[in-house]
Image 1 (cartoon, rainbow, N blue to C red):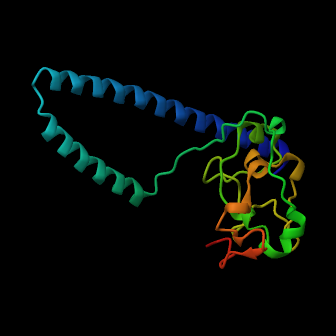
Image 2: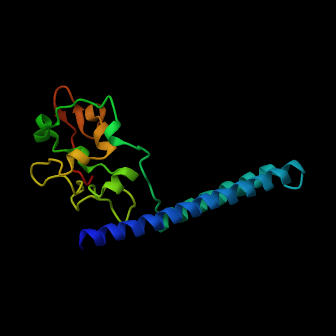
Image 3: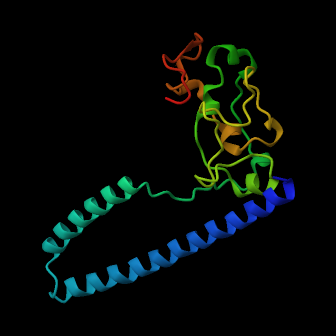
Length: 188
C-alpha cells in the first residue's frame, strides 16, 4: 500500500470512528432523557424505586456479560494535545537498561493522540482504534528487533515520553538494584 493510499485509508477510518463517537454522544443524550423520565416517574410515585433498581442491576449484569462475550470494542484516544510541549519528563537511562529489561515497556498497549495520527509516523492497530500497533510477539511495531531501539523516537507518543518504569512491577522487582521482574514475556 502506498503512503497516499494509507493516508486516505486512515482518514476514512478516522471519519468512521468519529461518526461512531458522535453516535455514542447521541446515545448518552437519550440515556439522560430516559433517566430524567424515570426520576419523574419515581417522584410522582408511579414507579417503585427498589423494584426499578433491582431490575436495572439485573439487566446491567446481563448486558455487561453479553458485551464481554461478544467482544465489544471502543475507540480510545490519548488526550495530550502537544507531546513536544510536555515538561518534567522522567530521566531514565534506558540505553543502559535495555540489555536487562529488554524494553518491556514497549510491549504495553496504549491509545495514541490525534497529534500522533496526524503526523503519520506512529502506526496504530486498525482492529483496535487508536491503540499503538504491536507485532505478534507483543512488542510495538516500532521497537527494533534485537536491539529494542525505537524506530520513531523523535515522534514517539506522549505515553512513551512520560512513562516512568521505576515503580512498575511489570518491569522491575527493584529498579535501583537493576533486578527485572520475573516474567519479561511481552505477550504475558
